[in-house]
Length: 281
Image (cartoon, rainbow, N blue to C red; front, side):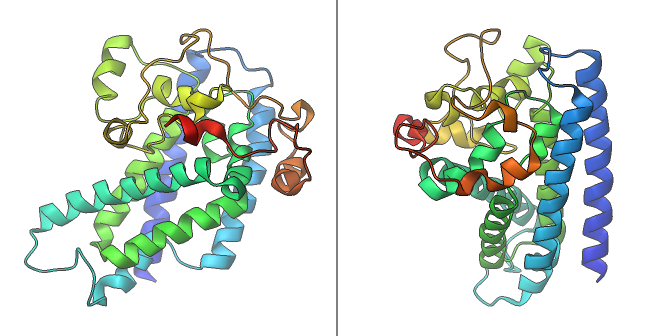
């Protein structure tokens, strides 16, 4: 119970603080004008996010840190060996769990039924901090199942897992900001971390660009595995976010977003086939 309480307090306190900070930043210095009012977007995305959290609580019952605590007794764990220096275990935990997130994200762009779920995230015609929580509940559950499996296999230090969780959540919110850093600062940070201008390319309506910049917190995996893209073909100002062919009227319709992955689509529907982004990686 102690781990669950500690994880919940730390995660949600930081989540709320970062969300508010990014919201203030993008309101004061918006990168581009939104097609829908921010408050309307927040309500729809907040409802979808709440449904996802409730579904994960009901299905998974445990948070990542609690899973790590339970996995400490795993005799086959890779990172619970006492002979491995503590600092090395922490660094390995942060790197490997972020790599797991990269791999999962790449799968959601390359496997047909997973892409249908992930379309909910990409179908947002706008791009702001609330986009960071726009996910189909089933996608959230599947992602966490894979993530938890990796934690059981690695058996990393629970506090290191908490650090990875806080880093991933912080960068995820910040990277979806409808704002931009000064060019010199963005150039420095993107060498290691995902930045708003970098991740916005991933939300391009151009299919070839949707398969780029897949990292959650660290950009090093995209550079390592050939999915990094520094600038969109249309340029930063000409980039259009969203999905071609997505029903415009359902952009913020929670019921439509929940049912979208399961609707029958004709072969001619741009959303009816496997994301071609994986072919361009």
